[in-house]
Length: 80
Image 1 (cartoon, one colour):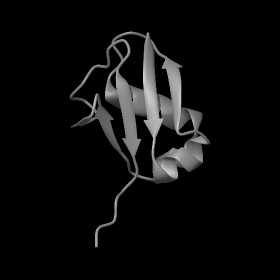
Image 2 (cartoon, rainbow, N blue to C red; image 1 turned 30 degrees about the vertical axis):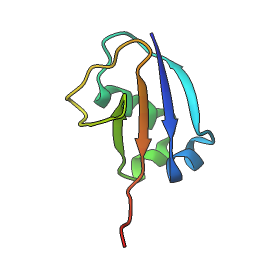
Image 3 (spheres, rainbow, N blue to C red; image 1 turned 180 degrees about the horizontal axis):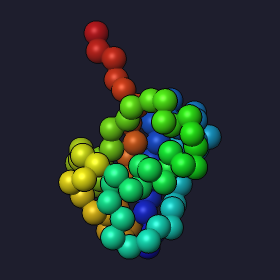
Image 4 (tube, helix red, strand yellow; image 1 turned 135 degrees about the vertical axis):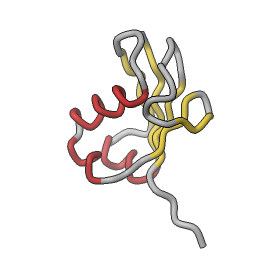
């Protein structure tokens, strides 16, 4: 199934892209997707990041991705 991934800030720099289309197996959870991305780019393991599915913030185990979902990865934010 196809997912649309959007990367922001440091994550976009590490992934060398701001967005990609990604083919994954159906029934993949957010946690599994994060593990796959970290396996593909070990530098992601060094930072914590948040995930939104279809513009809703989620936890690793709360959501199973569906066809054509938009997945956004956000680095830590600093406030001021």
